[in-house]
Length: 126
Image (cartoon, rainbow, N blue to C red):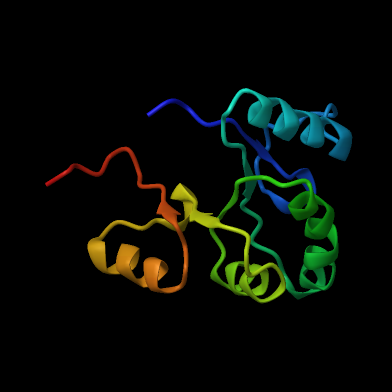
């Protein structure tokens, strides 16, 4: 499988690698370029927010969803629930940061409507 481009949504991620070049314009450009090349584009949303941040999470995420990424990569169960409620058509992939290390966890997330689970590289096929 070819690598898929992805980008952290800076206000909605804990990735320290986001630099000052991130903005909605660059995100839209990345999504458009990936789609023009026939590739998918995923946005990483790995924030683990306290209650105060929940108040603005959906508002901050809405313009990102409207840009048309192919999926959100997420790890927080509460945020996944909120995205399901507010953006039911948006595909969600479970981030490696959610620590899915067994088939029961994968099945649970599948039943919650997630379309992909990213497993830790230390897991074997056996």
